Image (cartoon, rainbow, N blue to C red; front, side, top):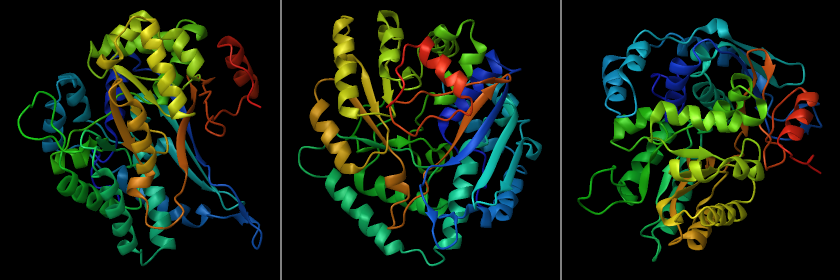
Length: 411
């Protein structure tokens, strides 16, 4: 059994789920799985990863996932967060994932189709553990004797790079649950990082020397290892607001205002790439510049994005030193160091590193995602600054969305 706790997911799933409970309890959604790894094996004519071979095993693991419920210590841990409300924890005490909302189908091409369809409130927790299941099932079948020594060597190299002179204030966070090699390897990586980089201070604590591991997005390991859990919102929240808000053009504004209504100043990091950076900056006016603590980058050139954010704050008469820029798109340690050197002293910085941290043992990782594609029967989409990151099966809707947000067709 790969997933043994419903806390083995990212924090932003709970923060979004609470907003759904309070503001959109009747919303109906659909999610679809996609593997971005390119290539068909010429010898077989099948997808190179041939995930269809493991469909039955993946279904068995999902069935086990759906047998789980939140235990009292887990609920008490969630209740300790100042931004988690008591009624939400009470709801989680009754919650279980339901297998009827998810289907896994082996396709003749060798790929798999995973569709999640049902009430948003009852399906939102599927994404992260299902992706982790697909990864671990794949790698335990294809790498029966994993080269852990190579993984440890690569982790040692990352730690050495982070501990280089002049990088004491550089802090990283683990965002690697969804694409990790395995649960066991994920925990080992976090234990090694905690021991050798030191754990960053929790908010409000000013004693001792803060370490370079700021925390983890994984709630289970945060509880287990004494780390700070990190996360706010994901793309699905802003995508759903395309169907839930009063007017499509105002859907990004509506999403940010709904978030602020729920959290009243907590969890104030805005996700900037659902409609591309230019559309984000048009909506992220002086009000939001002051209201939110910062923004998160997740597609496009991070150096250009950071410069545009700093310029935007300056033009809105907001001191960037009071704001946080979070970088989280396909980061490696060298890329993190380069970003840190460009932006240090100009704003507050945070870095979330995923696949390259929790799935770097020398094998090609799976680039897999599960994205919301419909809400209340209406297509929803992300118009990414990075080619290949958008997911929508309705080209007419994509064209309409580009028109509404004044976004040019990608070349």
